[in-house]
Image 1 (cartoon, rainbow, N blue to C red):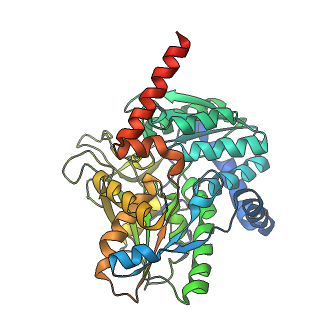
Image 2: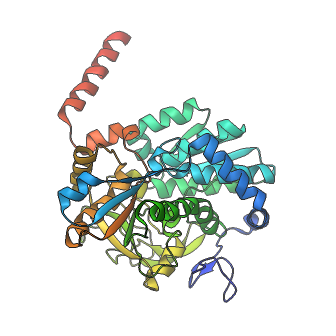
Image 3: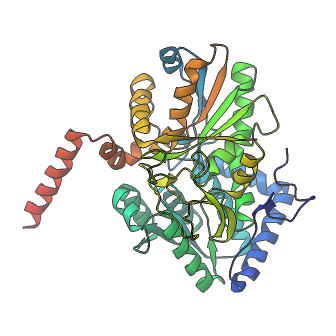
Length: 419
């Protein structure tokens, strides 16, 4: 199915979702971006340049790995993972930022801004800006700055200015709001590199298009390695860019079930989670430039969100997924914080892989469902980010006493040196 075919509806809408809900002052900038994006899509040389740069700079194509030990341990389906954690900067985010960087060069903009939660998108954006020579500013909620300090360190040393956002819940949605304010003020020379498939049109389509390289590779690789397509494909879902990326490789195959895995946080009924569709807690609304399902109260005010993974605690979900969910094309499940911690331990000890906390949400659902499937079934997980660079967050999530002792000792040594 062509999810970007607007011939029977309004451009930028997916069923009832999507659109452009922005201040009038930004309409000219959005139209300029849309026209440039159309030109890029229609220019085969653009995609060739895009693939070439990802190959030489980021390390694509990323491989698919068979998890033999985990498959035997669970005793059910054969488990494979798409290794986008092996990208330069450690996640799928680099795919989108390289694409938007090339587009930004065509626009003639010299400055880029971005929001980030877990720091993966901010890290990737700062890396791209250094490579292309753009001025760069990253907005990040103060809570996320504190729990993702290593990524902040790298962003700043790559030349980006990191702005700690102290409004609201001080997490991802608040960083998005600050980015929008910056863009309105500096639209003449600035491009907003939105990190996920959310926001006003053309961002959901544009980010999904760049991330489709994951699914294109995965489909070809699965056929080469196993001789057939997987029965199920799993991916974590915050805004939804990594899931949109891999799902597009299998969207036309009705025998392949697509499963998005949201952040269940403290669990259903706790109101301390970020599961928009899995817990059926979200309502349709308009915010941050587009229409989709948002976690909100009866008065339409946005709810607080929670996840052990900073990159998944977003209030909304991309409008394409809202439409696909209503159409029954994608199933959504949720993984709680505790389930994520246990799954991470299992994957590390059985396979020597360290998926990011975000990515591990997809593993949780796959681990739950694999044992009930026969051994001739194949499932594929998108390992969209790696956890070694998030050691502070993971060590805290796992409540590692030795790590805490190490950090406390380092802090004490630092104070002694200063005094």
